[in-house]
Length: 183
Image: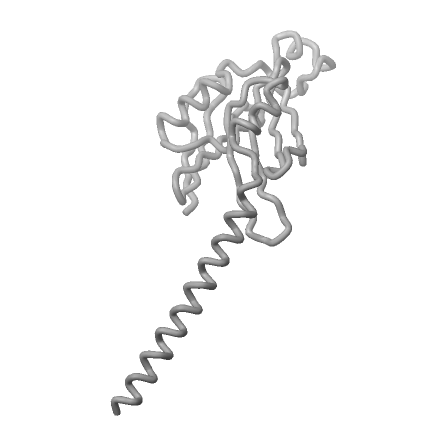
């Protein structure tokens, strides 16, 4: 009986040792893989000439060979840009430009506004971010100005821990239209 107990202990200790070595090895591999990624300051420096960075989010993709993605919303002279960047080398993967409407473009649809939109937003994105963060605490991942049934609405994604909130802010009045969460 004692011999069986001793052999069982050896198996448990051996298996535990192998398991710990594997876990540590995997941890070191992922840590080394992520060490070459850009920091928030480095990524923001790459787009500083475009304008002011309003939001920053880093998404890790756990598939081998696929880089992590950095998403930033940048205020430019003519509107806002959403930029997706490869976190390992700073290459721009995707860029989406959202031009803000001005009173000139509202009166002249050829200048860049939709003919269905009756006016420019009163609330600027910076203010919409403040209003949304008054409702939900966290980090703004994305802000987008959309038109819904001829109403301008800022749609924000805010991340807090494991939760993601979607907040809609009326671009004319600043009122919070919707707050929803995804776990």
